[in-house]
Length: 171
Image (cartoon, rainbow, N blue to C red; front, top):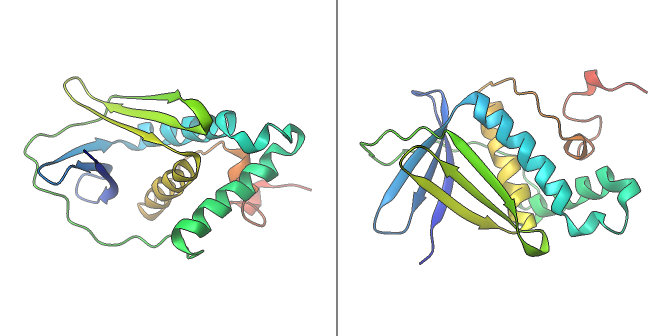
């Protein structure tokens, strides 16, 4: 059975929402700003550590990962910039706030990501290109929400000319 995961920004809750559905039912879990920042940094590090592309060129890992990131986004979005789309969260009477996120490396650059609270868990296994897209979409939603997150992913900033915040760069 296939599970469909989607990420949303809930303005009412000021949280990111993860919906997971299998066609019969849908569950919603919420991420705080704090946990979103920690997750994006941990995901960025995990992408770097598990990327098969940088094994052959470790000295240029930031540039290689930046290229891999851009390539994954172009293949998925056709190169268009992130544009948040209004969405409606499913009616779910159980409020599930994510308390921990586990990231486990698997073979061939894949990762298992498990979002947990005290009673529930949402688990997914994703390939490297999908991990890049997930990182980009969650960061895009956080930026749209006007969250000022401290993202420490050097290869991400190499992906755009001048980096994500050119004022932080010196030559």
